[in-house]
Amino acid sequence: MSFKWHGAKVKAAFSKGTADGIEAAGKAVYNESQKRVPEDTARLRQSGELEVDKANLRAVISYGKNLPDARAAIAHEKLEIRHPDGTAKYLENPMRELADEIGGLIATNIKKNLQ
Image 1 (spheres, rainbow, N blue to C red):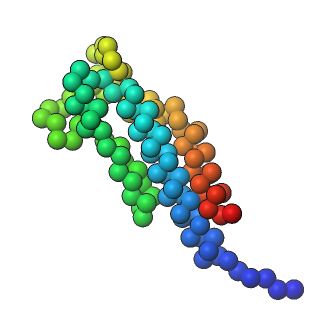
Image 2 (image 1 turned 120 degrees about the vertical axis):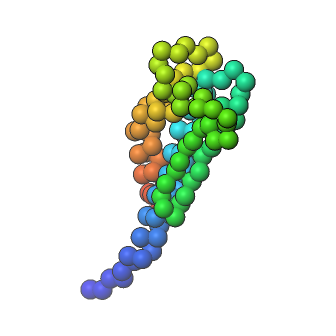
């Protein structure tokens, strides 16, 4: 009996699937957070960024870059502020609510790359 080892190929497919899944998960959370960003002038919503680093298997979502004040943090953290067009925890809540979906997106992309 003989067999052929495909360890390197499997490892590469697993890594690519994980990276693709992290990108898909980042997009899902970012898109949901965009729906919830409180904003009177749209500047905070427009400051939203999704950066995906596939090499280091990381997705980073940020708000408030290049704004002259701390409105992103204030709008996110101050639960007592009532927002007519959004909510506090506009990034944290989508992350929590989509936790199961995030795992599923990563798993689906790994499976797809392993086929």
